[in-house]
Length: 475
Ligand code: FAD
Ligand code: NAI
Image 1 (cartoon, rainbow, N blue to C red):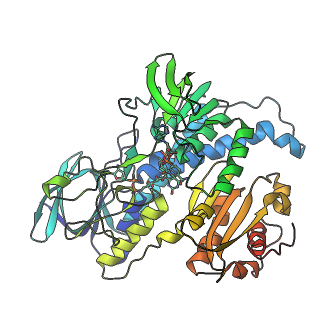
Image 2: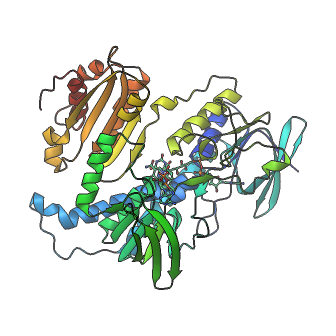
Image 3: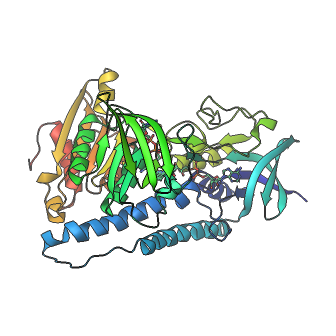
């Protein structure tokens, strides 16, 4: 017997599970199907984000930062530690338990919200009487029928052509988050978000890390001034980043990996390492969905083609998150999931792409919202800029973490905030104030006039807003 639902969600990553919960809150009968398995073969909802993305990477970033502080920074505070040692297996086990808490949390939320969870691979079988029949291939075969379907099948790591991931020597994010020991030498290809975060984890734990980047500019999407400041900090830490390289032949053996490349000067070189992490972007995942039987349209990148409202070309079939256009970010997927559930209910779900924040969780952290200075120039917008360095912030000095700055960009005429860019301590938390301000279309003067707690890093935000009008108080 097929089970009938108002909404069937395929994928329980941040896009899917949040869409399922919101749809259930709105009174729909909801099913969510996800195929991810934990080590015991049981369900592990949460998608890439929970299992091999946001959550485990932040767990390891935190652990490795503790290790780095214990080795290099505690003595500045008068704390002398002797014989600091590393138990990689315990660190990985802690990361796994953080992941499991999140998996279990989602299963609990499904129960609480009366979302029916199905563990297995979903594939479309047919459209029938204004609904879709979906086969779930799990421990047993089941069929669910949904009047509305939300596809949230996410993305997978892009491999270099002809160099498949073996997750032993040639690693995607999956293998990079589960190494059993610290590689003596580690090479990463791609100095994007994953390259910098994973490179930071293993460098802090003792690897000699080299990142090979194809583009000639470092973090091209980031405000140039902020990217420059971050690069300076990474250079100082010993994170070696080679820009403008062309990667050639890659050979792997039991002993390690050898990567041939041509550097920016045109010299043919090669580098040997114990492990290679390939972090050159991700591809939308529609594998196994059997979408072609219904004629679901994909774009040239293989993403499901949707309109601004996340509607596909098939009536009643929606798609959200990494499997559609736009930034591949968990919070963007969540916002789309909520908006689609609300649209199905006839409400006006809304996602503001202009205020989606980005964060790179390195040390220093990099966070931004809105347009960069180079984008404003390219768009011909007249703007004013204000910056404030953490060096002049009392809380940053007390923390012993004074790298970086906050930068405001505001419209030259109206003073409306057009972009805020931060490199420095807790940038991931500080950026929220800027997101709220931009969402309310605040001016830089609005932030400059708001009382900020002292001593706090957020005073640097206020000071950067004051700097737009050339009236910083502490610099
Ligand atoms: P996913 O999370 O990929 O979930 C898709 C789910 O669908 C999976 O569980 C998959 O098993 C399931 N599925 C696929 N096909 C089927 C099928 N046919 N049947 C049943 N189930 C299926 N983003 C951030 O915002 N912040 C971060 O700090 C961050 N860190 C990251 C770190 C790493 C190492 C990586 C790789 C990514 C990171 N991201 C981060 C990106 C983030 O993980 C993704 O943007 C987010 O997971 C996308 O959510 P989603 O719901 O679209 O898809
Ligand atoms: P990315 O797009 O951030 O970076 C890929 C990098 O690889 C780019 O700099 C690109 O120029 C380079 N590159 C591509 N092909 C190359 C080649 N052949 N040789 C050398 N360099 C090459 O992708 P990444 O780091 O794989 O991450 C994927 C996505 O996951 C991110 O775009 C982001 O959306 C998400 N993510 C988000 C995080 C966060 O929010 N903190 C953390 C990690 C991932």
